Image (cartoon, rainbow, N blue to C red):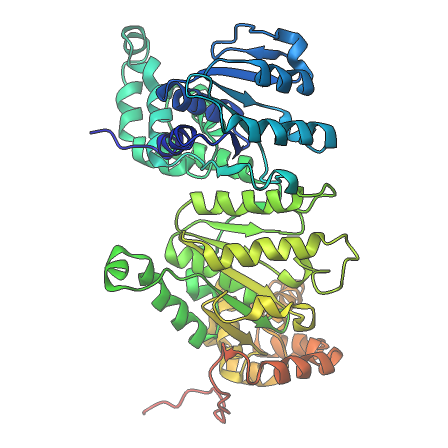
Length: 526
């Protein structure tokens, strides 16, 4: 038995709404073609004729034939009057009307028409479906319009798109010209479907087509995934490559790493059966350069899931309502991917203005509202890692318990953590930590941030390279450390303020400081 797709479920819902005599539906989706086809099927299934309207082509039927009032009905007022005068049991799919309802005259006409259509007989029943890219319904229509948010294609629907894409390869002519292509494509079906999750139907078909034409009629999941990265980018969402080393890339922060490791198993079906809720995410507050962003890159790799970097600020628009629509679309794409990590770096800058009145016309406040609502109500497997350096700019609503699973404070690294950071960085640069007195260097880096500790390794390597390309020494690292003016010294008041704020508000991401009195030299048992 074929699996029912998300689109089929949405179509069934629309059919039920039409049978319930809802005269005005507001369907939200940027996928005009895919959604139109589903709406036509839904309306036909419940015995409605279908009319489609746009401001250029006027009125047509489901197969594109011009219907009264034809092109003259391109004017929205004329089309609404034609719907009022019609006596046919029909559904009118309006492609462009969302742009016209801002006109008070059109809005009034639509509101009155929606009210009158509720009382018509069954044979004369009419309904209007506004197909729009956003859910920005005018308040005058809020009581009349039923908002339906159309989901992106799920795996079952993407599978059908894949099957359609490779169908020519399985034809008699295709098998003759490319004898192995069809069998190869079928073997990669699952991987290719997974690679396209999160894309629209049109973008999915385009990715599959590109793979076929550029890879000698072969479906290559890596090519599809690369194309998806390019397609998904924009409007505040970026596909980011995680750190391949996983949590081994992070020196220190053991309590935070242990907490994240435990959460990984909570995404399994066994966890659902046990009664565990899906993890929502973690909020990392602390000193800049101490590993907050690195954790996001590392945990995505450790969990083996995609990493998306979200920028709510980039999703903002000067047009009223567009910012919220863009942010909702950003979250919808993330949710469609299934389990993934959504990284919101320096979130206080993205939501700057949300606590400062209406200086930006309320755009930041609206963006905050959309984000908080999504964090509270979402059901998907997106794990959010939000980071912040300046807690004074964070709205209190964002910090309330329940938005995130936990809040951690990331302080300057302890002496033990500085040793770990040095060891990790030396290994990354192809150097052996056993050749370096890391204890001595770590002590010299007191009050350094993690990034400042890591930065002295390449600085020392530059010095050693210029000196006959010799190996770096402990003295090179100590010399590099002496040249650093730590952020904690330049912004001592800010660092201390962060510590004071976090004292009773957040868990520590680092273990308690343990003073190491060892020299780092190895004692041999002779």
